[in-house]
Length: 295
Image (cartoon, rainbow, N blue to C red):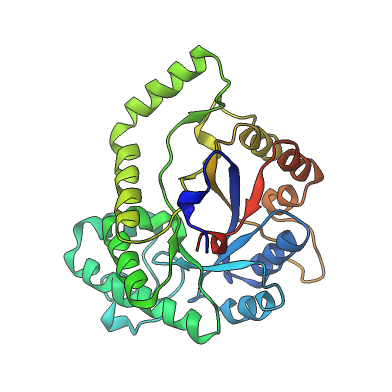
């Protein structure tokens, strides 16, 4: 078994597809981007209608690492409504992302209900026959301490070994000029509270036995700001990728207007299968790995 600490002075990259099971269109795009592209891992939304379909498709691809996309902001909970009434609206749906984030910070009763629902989502995935390799969250709710605490408890009770980190600072190519490095330092200083709360959460998870990547790569945090085109942005990020283990997250999806059409509804799926992207990974000696490789 490999520890995250063993990946030093080598560029390792996990490419994760979020929202697996959100719909058939998302599921099919994720599988295609694993077969024909660079997706190495995906995270299942076990409370969504296409979860069972996603699991059935994934069983044919054992090299696709499947994690759990902990969800408090989309669809309906798996727990009966009166047990999670502080997390849902009058229609029984989860609160929107913006409302739920505020709710998780201020509502003590909501905090008590988070673990109950997230455990139900994990048990649903296990019942479907998924070998869960890692945790992350929909709309990044695991930036919040109450969700981090739930992840740690689930890790200890059920042995899920790995979680996505939100740790990420403004970054630049190590070969960048002094002006760009000074700009990076200034931006990190200005965002000190946000960046360091994420770094603290990273350390808390690791101290409690969870393995994590070294960082989560966000395209918008690369200095200089990457070009507008998604393909060009990804290529620039790959060229500047630091040593160690990084994760990049995407949301591949096909057009759902016609079941016979494979037209892309988002650029992610196109980019993830693009030959220039694949060549860039090879040319920059980047090793694609999955979350299961951290165990």
